[in-house]
Length: 539
Image (cartoon, rainbow, N blue to C red; front, side, top):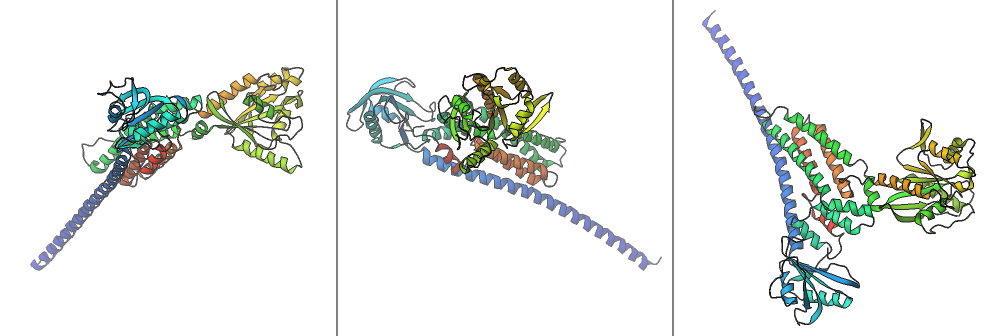
């Protein structure tokens, strides 16, 4: 081979090697650039979250400064004549009440009642003789210095003490919820505990009281705090995977473990939201509709439940035309009963409208009480007769037969009441009906037979609908909304986990934020105003 040819071949090989080196260099450069962009993107997302959190914190602090400045006072025991009225004072100048409105030269012992003359701070006039108690912060309800004046409850004394407190420098009347707001700001109460306190103040039934007290004591808050801790750990694992997944010192399978924990958390949250209707039932009452054919004794049963003549009773069919409601406390649970028009064929336009409303009411009720006139049942062949009676009500109730027994199936609870048993000569046939229809009972509103057993069955059904056995039951639609959003973000994180881990981390952060909003770890002014405005002045 000639020298020129050798140089030509050599140059070609060199050029190939250079091109190959250039390509490899470009590939490495692009790869490093992509990795850098992903890290920058992750850092930017994290910075965005931090800035949002910082902005929310600044807003929160500004709002705190506005509502927590100065010394506030209020008549905490409520207005109107009473035996004792309690004035509550909170703030840095609370001790001035003791020094300027009593003759005490020094502060009394903490949390000890002291009998003193209550004076006008300007004129020195004696307004009343009452009890003074001093609560030094932070061991007080608000976490600040507090004091209380326990005076006689006449309108004149209330007005005089109120005016006297207003004369003290830097003192201002409290707005609704101001004392509890300061307690929340100073870390004495979490937001779920604040809501529990509001529910306790407004509780009307025993179960509302119990549930509100459990929430105020922190049972629900502890559950949410545990979920937030789990979420933070999952986010930390995903962040570590994004930044260090190529390094050898990262735990093997950290990403897979994070996915498993997300699925486990989703399962817990969905169980927590199994029946969101329990929120409305416990707060606003279980809706129960009493339905049946005309003249079967619906209004009589309704009056027995109410223990007063709420509905008009008559032997004339079609007496009840519109829905008659009554709110009651049954076994400690709030219940709203609805007595409805008898369902039958009629040409009366007004009665037809009442029947339409009765059917509509039954379809949206939590529990349906179906009243059947047992004296009209064919006791020789009772089951087909009862089923025909149920079909005539046009309620679209589904039943199933199992082991010779007939059950109502569907989303609504049903109690079948075989009324007017006093008109039967023998009760054996009715006993057989009770065995065939396990969700039934017999009664006579005239002779008061079977009503106790009916009320026991009714109470059990209501308790199951309210589902109050769990300490962590949801009692606020606000909680339910945040939990649904949290679940949505978690499901989104699972869905995009195989495509974009950075976006997955962002979805997890948003889920964590939604949980944090429930207990006040992440708040905004609008949410806080809604919650604290439910309180009365002095609380």
